[in-house]
Image (cartoon, rainbow, N blue to C red; front, top):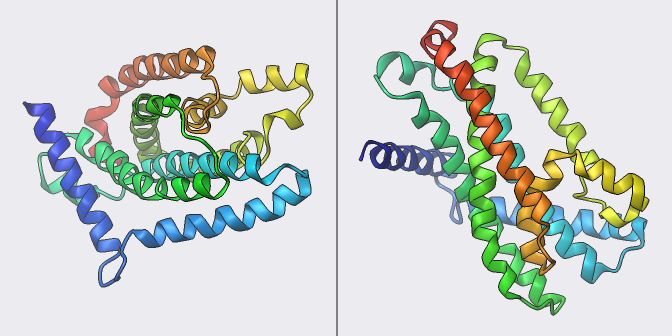
Length: 253
């Protein structure tokens, strides 16, 4: 019952954030969808030509990758300031810290749901068939979210204590963007080196559990296992620090 109330309050706060961000706008958060569509089209045209990849393969691959990466990037980067930006509410109201973390996750999930609306148009344009594997998208998003929640909580704690950390995290995410097959396809990397490189890239696996089902490709069991382990071990690590530092967060704000 308590968890249900926290989720409901977090959803209300997330919805209000989006509503305030796009107030007096006619189409509201769909501006985010239009912006994503423009980025996909322009990046797809430029890099598809550079890599000489068939557009019917490259553009759906790019679209799913960029949409999911935007969700991961937005959630983690906002998570760095989750407690800093909520300083007044934390000090004035007796609310659990989990509400502020869940608010960021739910807000970015709402934006993700808007951006995903681009994909049916791309698939229809290239006559890409939809297979039953698309049903794995939902558990894939749930599994990613399970991992990202602890990342937000951990980043929020340490960034509240060390105010230079948000910039470091953002720079690391920018580097990870280019090291992860989002704008480039894995087949561009030599087989032996590529398989080893991708195996140790956690963001590749986070993307793959959603991208593979969307594209109708066989889901790699290793990617699902690695994402599950990232979530499990990450939560153990995060809870270890959270239990020791949660009472100090309010004094760091």
